[in-house]
Length: 70
Image (cartoon, rainbow, N blue to C red):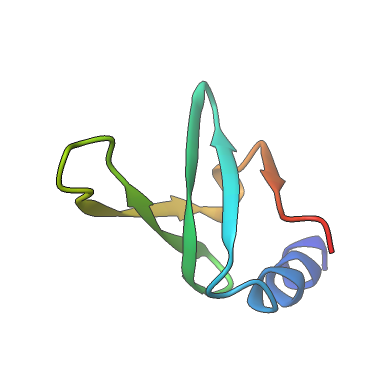
């Protein structure tokens, strides 16, 4: 039940910037997609040309998610 509720909440945040903690790692980027098991972020690298990388995170591994305040 918790996972389904989280999925529904995250689905509303697609195309917004969020931060996701997984263990000791913190990912920050645009939420590209989410399903019942994984979320996908497009994270900007700190390089000169502002390249992007896709990050796939298992929802079961997430410690916390920070979303923009509305």
